[in-house]
Length: 262
Length: 309
Image (cartoon, rainbow over all chains, first blue to last red):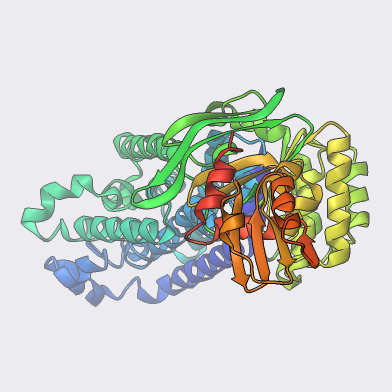
């Protein structure tokens, strides 16, 4: 399968991707290394004991001093998804609509490459970025086993897949909106708003009764918000994330096929 | 006509904004077809329709015998395109751009791109953000011509090039058509077009106003004749002749704009014993400017409509 477009975009984003990944790794290692200092500080659990809404706003629920609680509170329910979405939504909005706006997409669209192939190659780059971030973070967590963060590797792998799929889905949403409107700004705005709403719903659902049923529409719930770090990524969760991704890919193919390009 | 491009009622509208309206034209194999119009007339919109980048609102077009809406990759394999507002990746070098296109187009033999690079003194190893517009345009020329395409679609191709490189580019276009290939050249500069094209289409406000050969347009363009007579003359003597418009009459001096044969004017003037005559050749510039202005003169419009096809 041709990969020229993928390789070109990877070359263009090389520094950004390396920066995000190294920064994420550094942060994850600091969180890991700090755990022994906090694992016996049980007073931390008071923050979440009575279902604190403020703590929930930051995606924090349950025990903070257990390995899964510590990593959820500091990494998997907030910081990692945030960096993941910055990367994937940014690329999703830029790779078609953004490049079309600045004129560089025509260097590809006026070559003999079918639009569908261009889209698939862009999505491959999106997936690669999401996987790289999730994988590097997971490797840091494995290093964390030396710092008393004893979590099953299968659970770590599951939640890493969940975060990567979360990033992929929101990146695909940005691609779909971008290729539907031809506007990078609209793609960024709409997708960031949906992501923020999704995060809030998933975070607040455990402490706000009337929000509880809405958690099922939040992609955060299916990737990191349902105890995936402690219990692993379930098949239904992975299925929801995959199906949403496939639907968004199909919509993107339809909108990109109809987009007037510059 | 062995057509490389056909457009039948080709229309593109952007909501309230004008695009192009019901374009009809054909471009024959082996010709240089000039597409002339002021900025915003619809030239780039037409080109994007030909390349399959835009979806037409109505009408249809074929390029190299295929519909760009369905077979764009096949068309693009045999087509070279130089956009009017060429955008290159600022951090990549010219070499990286050329290597990328060569790889996509499966060009293993670099003889042609290398020759173009040498011919146009292309700077290959600096990021394109550090290059002048002219030097970026040279990279665009290599990208358009490097695979020896059957059809070249060039939008304002000499923009930013110095006169020497403009001349080299015109020579390259002549060699291309001498080779039996076809060039569609869009421009808003008459000079650029009339030096190398066989036929010209003029587009204004999204509509074609004329298609003709440069020679045909020159014949149709109004000539100016000035007479000086020893006594005052009645301008009506000339105004009554078909194809004549009196531009200026001042005593024994009279200036006429003439379409058609000159003999009736000379016969009328001879009876008045003229002492001097100045005849200027057909003014193509004036003809084009007529269309660029908002209110074309009635005489020129009716004349050109006779040549539209």
